[in-house]
Image 1 (spheres, helix red, strand yellow):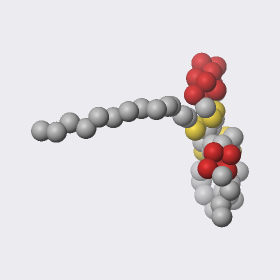
Image 2 (cartoon, helix red, strand yellow):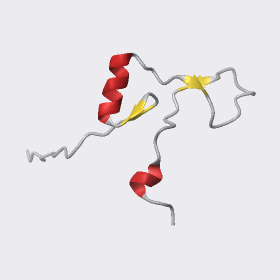
Image 3 (tube, rainbow, N blue to C red):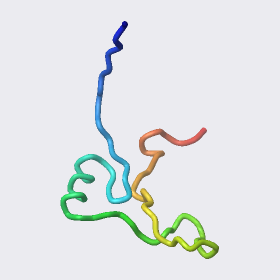
Amino acid sequence: MEQNKIVITGVGVVAPNAVGKVNFWEALKSGANGIKPITLFDTAPYKIKLAGEATEFDPAAILGQKA
């Protein structure tokens, strides 16, 4: 049986309580959970009003602008 090798080149975190592994670890240690009122859409028709939105993440900063 052939075995494939795997290489991990880095670790990144995008979570509701922090972005980046250092910030995420600090948020965990401080007890920050990131659950807040939903802001990305109108929740009026729904019972659920809270969620974990990753609002601090800017994909354009990592991936560049859409063409």
